Image (cartoon, rainbow, N blue to C red; front, side, top):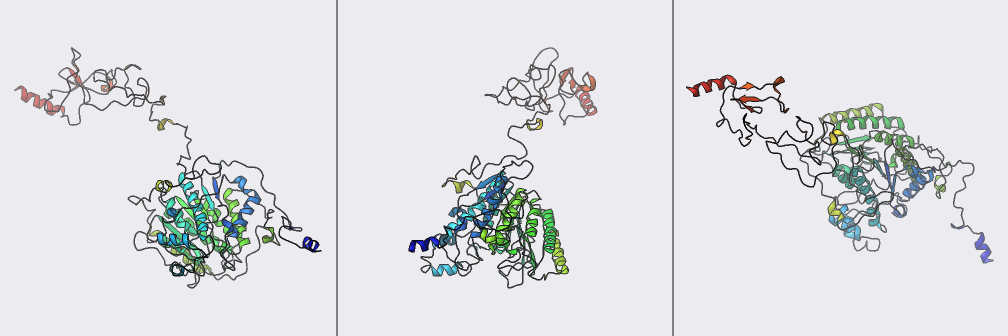
Length: 588
């Protein structure tokens, strides 16, 4: 009887793998892998196991949203349109300390739920309370999402991808020496520092409902990074920063921090309009060479901690607008606390970035129960909050942003700027596993994306005459021609050999510029060279015979001194009238 009762009871293992959707439609996954030619190359980073961490019971931050997002991406078959799919290595402590304090990182590596009572004073000092609790394997979680952001930034610097996606990153509140707002390590700052090793200017855009205070503070005094944050600001809404009047530091960083404070309930049309206006003006003025976009999904309607009325389509339209600038782009996650809407949003934006249209029906995944009862990609999530943003307020914000951009007076130069430390010191004590599908390490050497390694052009070979040039260099350099034999090499008679042309075997060096040589009419004495003006007589100067002063050797116009030919006179030569007068005086 006991076994019969156990057999009739429902357990997790006895439940069906896929949720019963009833009459709801199902999206069929993409099964054909298509190589993209004209579209940008996309790299997708998902650290294995990053969605298995847990902040604690009733905590709004749920890393499980990353597992839901990845399941939808794979369910739609978007991985068939993604060139590179990475499981990146975790960041090392040395990499984390490139921005964060050593004591803070050391604390994160040591603290755990088992010893937090012994480290209570340090927990208070580093603000790991309430919003930032101590949970199991917290340090490993930080290393995972930070390692993914760093890997994406390095691949952008190497020029082997155009768009790098890491939905596990984007934790923008963490400070240099303390945690803040569910964020322990600021992967965005570390990724931007990595981009600055190669890119002179980086634009950071934040569409999270909370102000990106951690990133703004890190680059408060820098003119190589411009931060633009679209967020809710009331003065008491976390983190309480991001006023319209905040401009950046008093030095070179002034006017390089732009804030767009918004009120509750902003709708799709108002948000997209002000976003496109501000970003287009910013890109035109700042001219970034790389963009980092933080796609916090708590700005969606019906978010657990948000108060906006944005739809998934409007949120994705902002992402689509940024990628159309065709600038190397790093896409990161961020906030978002209604996890089934977060995963829908980031899946939709992944489809935009890979250039693939996906149906509104969701594919079958093991997590179908999270998306009941509609099982739609674009769920009805707007119209829940009144829009408190008037057109006059939005116009005032736009005008203020444009006024600040006028102070830039063009994109800043990076001359004489300090270069970030070399990456090689980080790689000495560790080895990087070869990523799947790519030959080489995650930080490949940069190759020119506009020209293959085996393509050659006339101007690239230094052969302006269009002649063929041997690709092999001679084992020993050719001997320098003597003055008597210069101009009489084998080949086309009477023509001066061109630099880079055929001169024997291989590519010959151009002859060095030398002074003209005096040649005798009666013999072949080549040992006499012209010196300075003091030891050279200056009789009457006449032009040699030949059309336009050219000689048989093709060396251009020559002069004649007492019946002896000489090359083109130096610029310091005296005029004929003065030379004749001095010659007459010498005769007297």
